[in-house]
Amino acid sequence: MTEQATTTQYGGTIPAPPGTREVIPGAGPTPRPGERATLRLRDTGDDEPARYAPEWLRLREPADAAARSYDLLDPLRIRIANLPRRADGLVIHDIGCGTGSMGRWLAPRLDGAQHWVLHDRDPYLLHFAAVASPRSAADGSHVTVETRRGDVARLTSDALAGASLVTASALLDVLTREEVGALAAACAGAGCPALLTLSVAGRVELTEPHPLDREITEAFNAHQRRGGLLGPDAVTVAAEAFTEHGATVRITPSPWRLGPGEAALTEQWLRGWVGAAVEERPELASRADGYLAERLEACAAGELRVVVHHSDLLALCRPVDGVA
Image (tube, rainbow, N blue to C red; front, side):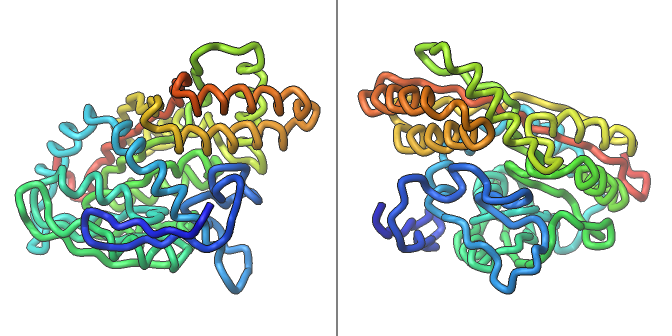
């Protein structure tokens, strides 16, 4: 893979870091608990935070945008419309923003002036999230951004004071039960809704089915739960946590549907999916090699279709001032 740059529709350029890799960083197994392709959640004490590959985020952004649930937007808009009006418009906190794909998807779908607060531990990604952020809302109102580098696993209600909405994408599954509880408590304490999209659901469908599909899926799911992370249990745990704080919770499916037009993403996803499974269960290695080769051949021939199941969650926390 050669170095290349991505130009967004908003004029920002997100360069891919140099180097040649068989698997894009972030598409394969996470290097340690608490790290993934779009952020370092926890402060590991390193002077230099990990810089994960923007090209993996570039590959997945169209699939993410197509997958996110539109069914949650109407109840979200209704809640936002009932919040007290602010002179400076909506204040939206994007947790673990990566290169800012959530803002590029959501900001043009909400009316009114918006100020986005982008949270991540990686300044490299924060910079490009700001550069590539949208500039106008659905009704043409102005959208502004600021960035905050910090440990997003320790977010508090004080940090969210005045927030109209908290968003995140592909975040819940790399949190622990305690961290999800803290996030729910922070949103409830601030009285703001939360739209948390694209959490892995632990189910994958590939055409044509293969006898090894189930074993790979089970091993991958076990890998996702390493170190106490929630993996495919995340949405259920999050729903329970928000409900305990009095929020109304809605969950809808948001699957990736990958066909010949998404071959590049499918290839990288396959390599990472199988690689994580083998890392979790090395005894699969000999059979997994042939399985991966067969699947990659079908992908290259345009014959493979994959559904990677995710879930979106909308938590409507009670406003702190009692507004309905």
